[in-house]
Amino acid sequence: MAKKRLACLLAACLLTASALTACGGNGAAGPDIRETSETPAQEGENPAQKGENPPGAGSAGESAGSSEKPVEISLWTYPVGNWGSQSSVSGLLSGFHREYPQYRVNVKYLDYNTGDSEVEEAIEAGETPDLVLEGPERLVANWGSRGLMVDLSDLMESEKAGQIYREVREACHDGGGIYYEYPICMTTHCMAINYEMFKAADALQYIDEASHTWTTEDFAKAVEAVYASGQERVAVVYCGGQGGDQGTRALVNNLYGGTFTNEEHTAYTAASEENAKALTLLQNLKGIEFDPTIVGGDEAALFGSGELAMAFCWNVAQELNLIINNQDTPFDVFPMAFPSEDGKPRLQGGIWGFGIFDNGDEARIEAAKTFIRYMAEDDAQYKRAVQTSNYWPVREMEGIYANDELMTEYGMFMQYMGDYYQVTPGWADVRTAWWEMLRKAGEGMDAAEILEEFENTANQAAVSASAG
Image (cartoon, rainbow, N blue to C red; front, side, top):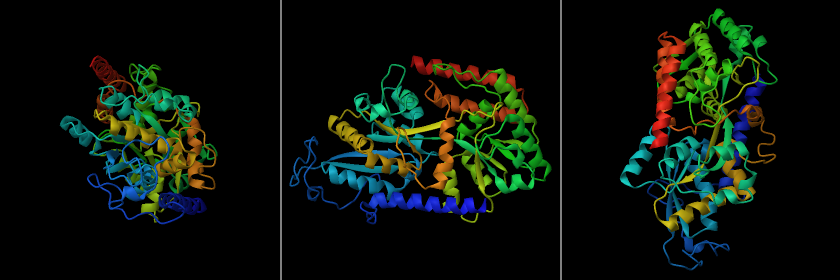
């Protein structure tokens, strides 16, 4: 396993290097970064010196010598891998600006702690960005359902868009078939264990190292073994907020085969016997505690520091950050699927892509659509866009992470991707109700009763959202 850590570190470095190389173009170093929400990317760059426009380009800046001011649009990006990094994004934008000098893209980098409130403030002020990089739960189920987004159905009619996996396409449109997101990348969230801690506790016998899966029975035995070895904090069910809640939902739903919503994504179904049984198991297992003071990111940090034997909030981005930012991590991270009765998990997926806020300016909307086409239609550019995310493509693309051991290891979890239900109406309110329910579980309240209360609250939110 020590060799695995070194290999993963090298893979992470290679992945970062490949992203930087792509940013610079032809292997050159990336451009000087002076990019903010107020300043155009590649400040000081003269669009008139970028050559002729490609056929079909817009009218603004029609020729290389045009003195017309370029159409400026804003891109707000949540931290989706290196899409949250100025150096990586600026490199991607330099190519777009060379090909489309009549457009300029200004970028603002959001985080998940304050990003939603910043977007809501912009909506209230009538100053929304043109482009946003995020997932269907915001672009479709929230802002799209509120009538704030541009219909992207025309973009989804292209040949390349037709190759996008069916399950992904279905998550990017509303109940009426209107697309509010053009998907770019995807992943499956998983959990992880401290390999050395499990080995010392003789708990490796309870996992399938080849498939990275385990049964619910073996999960319970592993927790008991690690706890008996002296590790009192085996795992934490974090419930201080919604951050990382994909992990706690997947944990509860997988343990005994429960569901979160119906197949049509119109109603919530969490108050099942299966989920009550799962929540009761977590309440009773020694070594698992419910912590109302932390969220997923805090739990991952505790795991990375060696204080926990497991993490429920995990994916490849977490390991990349762990390795790059803390090369002295004293143990090997072993990613695992969530435990299930039959050993066949259904993992929570993540999908990210672009949406366009409808600001009523057709020139800016066309510029934003051109940007999406640029990032998604050309295979070489699309590969760079996906690699920048540190996730996987939403359509078939071979060899995107060839010879990268870390990405290959995490790529195997894609086969376990389950239903993408985050587009169910009322999603924002439901996320709050979920962690509030987990807090009550941590206080020892009856699992069936609090799940029933949660489901009622969730379905009331769904009805209100659908009516509104």
